[in-house]
Length: 309
Image (cartoon, rainbow, N blue to C red; front, side, top):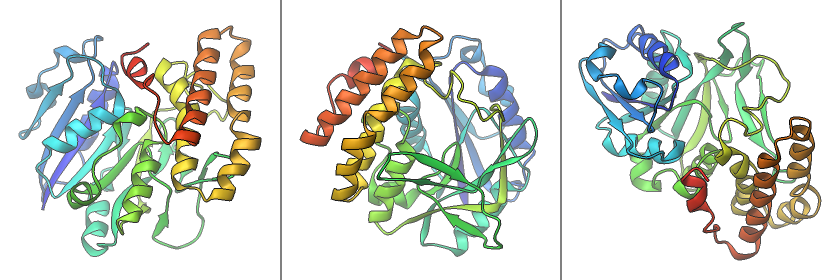
């Protein structure tokens, strides 16, 4: 069984090296695997790393000559992958040594699942924070949930952070939608795959440790302060997802009562930090999302967002 492990990265050199070190320690010696690192135009020293420094025998580094964002970087890796399965891992993760093996064994015996991933834990305190996620098409809200039952797999509306995809899913359903740029891209892919007959689920015995804050409070990172593109996409893509996959009555409820709620709430939260740049992007994303609601077309403003505004 050929496996392609794809790690996308930008300006997180130490995270990347730690992630790859954990992959090397995983129980995958019995598998034929390759490592593909897609560097999204880093300038923190990541761009100077050679593939030999990873200590992996098979694979490559792909360097984007300009910043392309997460979705396009993932697609670049997927198109270069030679494996029957493609395992995507964000660079700020530490892989449990049994994770890959658990996912591959499940995939082999459950062909109806085209997208699977691990339960997610905080790296700092090792506490679980996600067994599956659900999107409420009335509100546009996404909720991560923990499952305390004995079942092996939890169906999920997309999987963030780390997930295994059968190559045949790309062949039948296409790749990630690059117009979405980032945020809500995994649910969009999962809902599209479901239309093609492939389920999406998280295997609870598989574990990954995510280097994010266990603090439940909203941080500049979650509010879109780290990348300006995220602030815009948080608002626009929420509306796009509801329009594409919600029922008509859910769309109406969302449009009337919740579409404006999100940018207003986020604007209030960043106002004390005087992040007027983010407020502008929230509302631009809101209006472009409403434009999609009525026209079904994604705004040409996307090009400016991709180029980093």
